[in-house]
Length: 408
Ligand code: HEM
Image 1 (cartoon, rainbow, N blue to C red):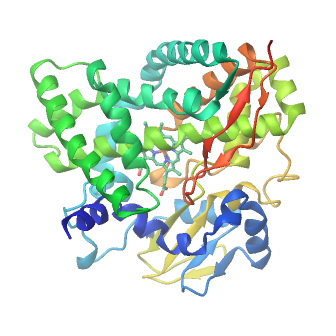
Image 2: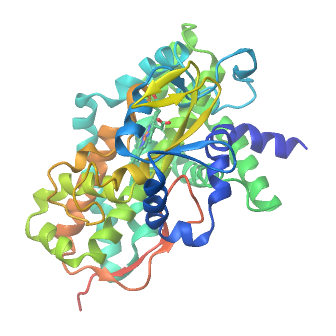
C-alpha cells in the first residue's frame, strides 16, 4: 500500500546496503559483535556467506575496496538508475560519479575548517548548557540527556532550522533515524511516513524563508543552487535529509559508545580526566574500537583484483568496518581499548575513497568537545545501570545508559 511504498522509498539505501547483513543479526550479535568479527576474520579476508554475498573482514581489504573506483555504491546499468521515488536515494551517499561528484561539491562548503571554527563556539555552548542541566540531576541518562540532544542541536543549527521549528525537527529526525533498520510494526511505519510528510513541509517552509532572506547556512546555499538549476528540488530535499540523518544518528553513538567504553575501562577514564587533552585521540580510539557505523557495502561494476582477490562485475560486497578496526594485522592488541594508541586514527569508521564521510571534521569536533567537557566537569562519573543497546545492526549505539556524577 501507499505507506509501505513510502517506507520502501525512504529506506531504499539502508535496505539495499544492509539487508543481507540484517539477516545475520540476532540479539547476542548486537550486544557484542566483536567475537563474530574475530571468527569471520579467521576464515579469511573475504568470506562468502550462504546468502551469496561476500564480506571483507581485514583492514587492508576493506580499505582497498573502498578506494577502488571499479566498485560503486550502486550497481551500474539501465536498471540501476535512481527511481526518483526515494528521496534519500537521490542523495550523494547512494550515487556513483558523475552525480556523486556534482552533488557532494555543493555540500562541501558547510564542512570547511573555517566553518568548523564557527561551529566550535556553538558546540561548546550547547555542550555546557546540556551538562549544566544533566549534572544538576546527579543521576541521569547519558543518551537522552547528553549524547542525543547535542548532535541534534548542532545539525539543526547547521541546516539553519529556525528555533521555533527545533522541537518538531528533533521528533522528525528521531522517527526517520529509527527507519534505518526497518519498520518494527504497522504503527512504527505510520510514524515514519508522518515524519517524512512533516519533514517535506518543514523544508519547503525553510527554503521559502531562505529565498527571501539568505543566510550563511546549508539550506540557503542549496536553495540558491536549486534556483540556478544546478540541482533539482528533489535532489535538494534528498541532500537535506541525508545531512539530517547523518548528523542525528552517528555522532550520538560516538559519544555514547565512547563514554560506555571509558567507564568500562576505568583506567582509561582516569587517564582522560587527568589529561583532558587526550579527548581528541580518545575519539579516534572509540571510532576504531566500537564504530557507530559497523558496515557499508559496494557493488563491483568492473572486474578487478584487489590484494589477490578476483572481484567479478555484478557481485555485492559487505565491508565490515567493525572487523577492520579490530584487525590484529593492522592494530597491535586490537581488543584493548587504549586512548593513548598512536595509530588509532587509521580506523575506517568514516569509510574511505570518494565517499569518505563529509561530516568527519564536525563529528570529530563534537566528539572531542563532548568527551573533554564530560571528563572535566564530571570526573567521578560512573555507571548507574547497564547500558542498553539499540536494536539496530548497521548503526551501533545505545538506547539508554544510566550514569551518576558520583557527587553527594
Ligand atoms: C558518509 C560515518 C558523522 C555526513 C559516511 C560514511 C560513513 C560515515 C561510514 C560512508 C558510507 C560509505 O562509504 O558507504 C560517520 C560516523 C560519524 C559521522 C561514524 C560520526 C561519528 C557525520 C556527520 C555528518 C555526516 C555529523 C554531517 C552533518 C555524511 C555525509 C556522507 C557521509 C554527507 C556521504 C559522503 C559521500 O557519500 O560522499 N559517514 N559519519 N556524517 N557522512 Fe558521515
